[in-house]
Length: 471
Image (cartoon, rainbow, N blue to C red; front, side, top):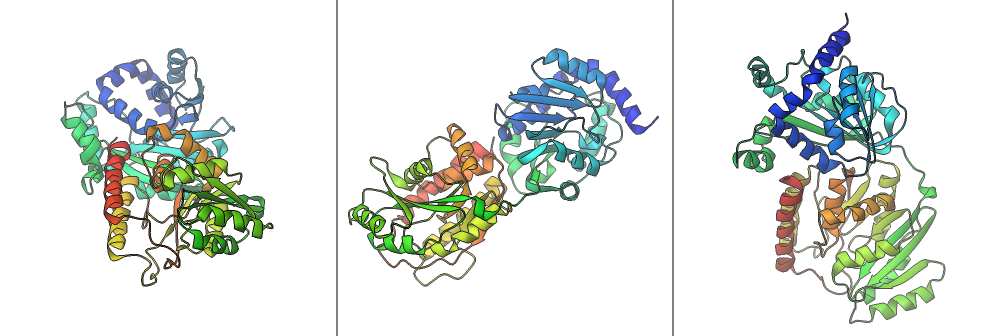
């Protein structure tokens, strides 16, 4: 008998006892469900490879849910427990499907596989370009504890496992044609102890050093990007403008034509210096450019202006450009190239790489940016050197997904930066930074109150702790 035959017989024999083992380790399974649900929105199409009796798949409430398992007995139980889902007996290394899903889940499966690389290669058959693959797996540091649990009858017996590190899995994913979006560790205490379990798994499990002692490792990956020709994409450049009269014409002159078509949308925020009138004059003076004026009305803040501008935009690609022009408009094609190449799905600028002009950013602003970049890199598990650069570029389809999931965070962000950053991070889109040369203002004064806005940003860090990190 092959190793797979032995495994199939073992899992068939264990299938009738699956619910008993889940009850015995209820807290662990609830934690895994909680972790995966954070990444998978309700109503998505989901494939789980190695689904067992289907409980995790059912907990995700998919619009279309399909489970595959090597054990025919487990599949029988799954069909009887969850008749609204589809379950198939099949091998992860030879997936019997070719339809794409929004999410593909492999939970606690890696250890059973003969050929992990081949299993990952098979996933290409069930992915579209925006699919996210979610892997959860045991940390090899826990091997002695898990073996002891089996001997004591606390944990379901398993055959010899593959004990692979996150680096090993990342390399195998790359070989199979996938790119890692983020990696992390979860579940420091896999049993329920009142108060202590929540403290360990919501807070302590996310701290440096301690996090590497967690039981569960998680990787989010995406198919290797496929470039889209820039000339097929239309672009909408949204320019929030309040008291920026002296910058309007320069913005229109300097924003380069991009892609198939470029529209420029000024969202005017009740200025006192005649900004709205200047936009109207420039629209008439440059009839060859597609320039629009949108009045913010009773709305307040850049975040409200960005949301209104994006709602009115018609382009495939949405861009934000601050009207102070401290980020040169000539840099925008770099952002489009990064997006269309597929290297990034949410592309934002970083002002903290190249030297700045003398008065481009005050010293305290620089310190604040550096602090918040470190904080958000840790909070979101993706690299952020400069969270506050106003220039951000993403596909309309991804913005619509962010907007659809906005209820999770609420209307909390007057800047607009963190509404997009948090939303993109929760959707596990690939975030990419582009260094830009930050210029000194040539008209007007900064509209950032360092201490008031710094306090708001600190509150957003705490908000992210509660809604993203400590969940």
